[in-house]
Amino acid sequence: MTLNKKQILTLVLIIGGVMSLVLLFYYVYFAIRSYVFPILTPFIFAIGIAYLVNPLVNLLIKKGMHRIVAIIIIYVSILAVLAFFIIWLIPRLISELNKLTILFPRYVAQIHDFYLNAEQNINNMSLPEGASEIIQNAFKQLNILPQLVEKFQTMLQNLIGGISNFVITFIKGIFNFVMALILSFYFLKDVEKFKAKLVQIVPPKYTKQIFHLFRDINDVLAAFIRGRLTVCLIIGLITFLGLTILGVDFALLFGVIAAVTELIPYFGPIIGSIPPIIVAALQSPWLALKTLVLFVVIQQAEGNIITPKIVGTNVGFHPALVIFVLLVGGQWKGVIGMLLAIPIAAIIKVVLKHIALLMTDRRQEER
Image 1 (tube, one colour):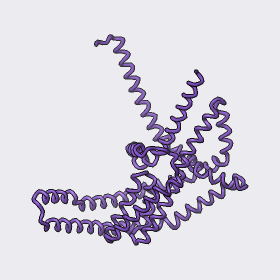
Image 2: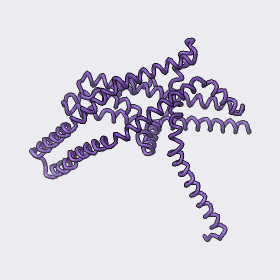
Image 3: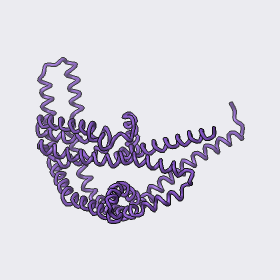
Image 4: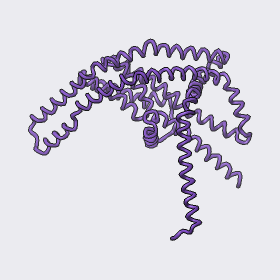
């Protein structure tokens, strides 16, 4: 099939237009990422804080308290919790990290000794020639000492070299957090005014649909975000107490890691359990077994009791879809992407559901 000049010109214009749109999209994306997003960061944090705190404010208002007084009480409580973290938790975490840094070479040596003993025991066993060769090749692949030492040295170099960047980032983070607290105070104080303005902006024909849309989004996010944060705190506390009772080193550090990784469904609990089991194994094989049992019990309690009671099933994703969404989020923004993947997917699901209902209603009206 041959194309005439007009068709070729049309095709070239279409391709050129698509490429121009792609380039424009990337330009706008990087402009927003480089210039607009840093400015919007405090506002985004403020909206998040206001969203998380608003139910507590409403609870105090129902008990007869004035809105501004309720907001101040909640914020004083938040600052008290932050002061506890800064005064009690962070110094202990730093202490445990320093201890881990000191003991890391010893742990590497223990792993290396275990590797050598296991290799020697295998060599002393009477195995068929083919099996012995396979095992020897496997041990060569598992010789991780040089890689561990190199990674540890790189980690120390990056830590020393990144102190100035950390200080700058920390100062920016404090500034953004303070700005977010101030902004969120005004968001919470004037939340009813914002709702009234939204009602004025939205055409009366769509007011009901918009109200139901935001209500459903709120239900899903409340179930996932607020519920998930509560579950993370519970899991972190249980992990810390359990490891402390068992006598595993760095129990506080591993409790914090367990709380943070719990935010990631499916993969998170596994990631959070690996470091303490390894450290427990270096202390004692029997302690490693008890630590493994502890994490199995915690995850069974989390999956069958804690999460169903606190989070519920409002997100409503099939496990296979959750894993797919997590992989997409991880490919997009790494760990941060995995943390944001489920809430974003849940919002998209709710919006698509409402669009489908709106289209169905229109078809019925046309009939």
